[in-house]
Length: 456
Image 1 (spheres, rainbow, N blue to C red):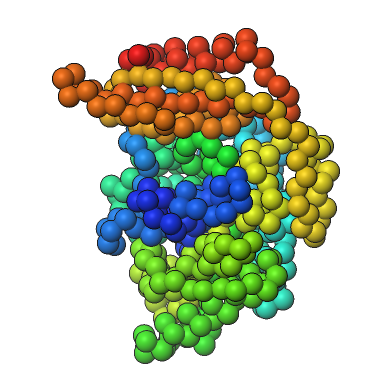
Image 2 (image 1 turned 135 degrees about the vertical axis):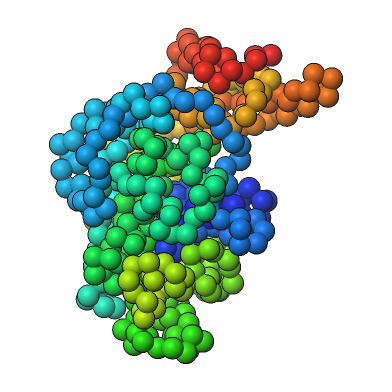
């Protein structure tokens, strides 16, 4: 999961690298463009290279952000790191997550996504890829454990501190993360369970689950997505004091496993390894493949930083970790152009896929878009993620994208103006001008009332 977080840095720095894998390796689901190629915008994998130097950390938001959402969560029983969510189907997550705590920024829109467990549906694209990866690792080593139902509410310690993420890092901000209160949050990566699994005695495991992050709105980004993290501690490296030797052994074993995994999922493809930087592993790597006539970066990985293992009481053990985003891979393999489709129950979508088979998605309709622009002077402490969240909470999945199309600085007023183009397009029907106008007016009103924007 951690890997996923780092990918955002690449995009924001204008680099061409995208997803990564690692301790928290899964970048969100948002790494692919509609065309099906991986880009620096990827959120599907956890690890993402820092903009410059080690201090850069994990995931950097485009904008900093602010106001407290209208909906908040009520305190619930402190989460247990390895608590299973097998009862998720009976949980009323709206009530479970609702409260008046001032730090709560989880809306009903987000609460409705929790517990859907798309990765557990065997005939869903995400479940199909998950099963292929798990089958491969179990064929390599039958002792690999597969965890896929861990409780989605974790602590800041699990999600950040245990993974060496600095206390002041931007990934901890409420503009990036959904908090329930001062200490609990919806996991931002599956790596939030890594140290608890290690402390519990697991030394070879895959951990898959839904993760949540506030982010922009487009065809490849969604506030909920799915990640898989893999960790393996090598028995043959236990008690080995020659660091150079155990690092090389771990690196070779890691690359062997991941190259085999790629072939199992994509078929035989050309591959190349690129040196990378992640705060959670050293050394760190990115794996790129040549697929559909393009080089695609598919994951990030590395040798686990020893302080993380030391914190788990494993001072004499060494190993590797990787992370990847399931939506990222699925959008490429199944030719799925819009990330919202993963969440639909429309039979025209769900009936196209069968367990164990990768089938190219056949578009069943393309409804016309409706573009509406909104321009305003930015308030102090402006955070773009807050505007995206406002649009999502107001319009739901009817909005396909929100794009910044103009930026203007007025030196006389000392203000900055942004103009955003909102693309309204439902996946199942044509929208009427009346309903779009009503939604747009609501967005305008809430932008002034909640975000303190000054409309132009």
